[in-house]
Amino acid sequence: MRIIKKKIHVVGAIIENEQKEILCALRGPEMTLPNYWEFPGGKIEQGESKEEALKREIQEELGCTIEVYEHIDDTTYEYEKVIVRLETFMAKIVSGLPVVSEHAELKWMTRQELPSLNWAPADIPAIEKLSNYKLNKY
Image (tube, rainbow, N blue to C red; front, side, top):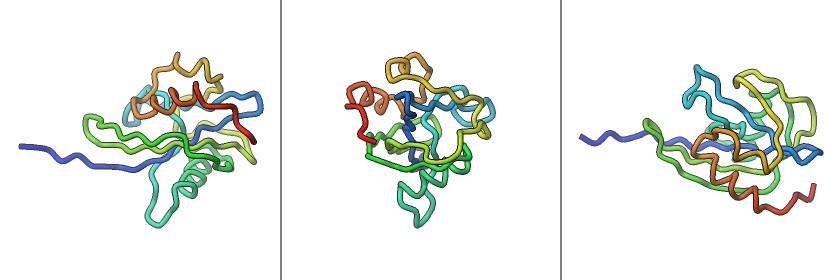
């Protein structure tokens, strides 16, 4: 018997600061995919645009307001129990400071340091694109 996996569509923010560091979020032990690093974000709700979903999720998860910029990657990854479509966007914090609430840890890292973390598989293609991505214009 073939098990049909649930498909979820999520968005992730590649938040870059003034020092050109990227915000990385560690999934907590009680979350699915525990102890993997990811770009913060979450599920797109009914009627939301990808950008609206990302702004809402970052406000809920990190307590700050972001501006969403260009689309970086669109990856579909089949995990053990779910199929995830992750779309990542460059973003910048416009108000507030990121606060740990859902994640176990937050960390700012340079693009060169990103591959040293244990990333969730769906996030890896975006990291590979970032290393070749020309520095932002904002």
